[in-house]
Length: 201
Image 1 (cartoon, rainbow, N blue to C red):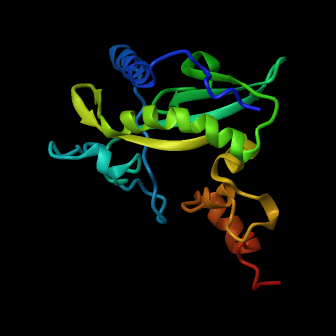
Image 2: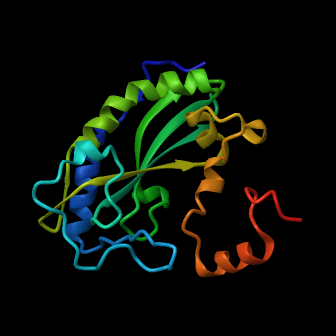
């Protein structure tokens, strides 16, 4: 069971701002683009965010044509005694999943990671996440919104959204991640189809 008090190791908003500032100071910001069905970036390299933008209105999903900061929040369960770690990564850098490049936001002791327990734990952190999404980040003197990406192992992702696995009628997150496939993936889909394409042989 999750201990709802948790162990808050950092102010999420402050930690993210400090990490982005450090990346800018070291000239290590890596631009990330969203790609369309034509396999081309949906925004130009010199695109800018309007001064009047309202980051809070976008809720972590700014238009793909705007420059943004990609941030992942994921859960990692394990250890002895068992605990659920909340880990934050800034994707706009090289090797964002390297433990040295991540932010350990919280640790909650737990024995199970079923939906009710994880939901109770995340309810504590949701206001902190919302606060970060309502603000903007400064990247080389430019205001940018945050794009929130749910990450982690397959099981924690399904648990967070309350997905019941292969018996669910809604496709899992992994299936949805191929919305804008690569050219190589496009070729495979054309030849073999997808899990959602059940009408073919």
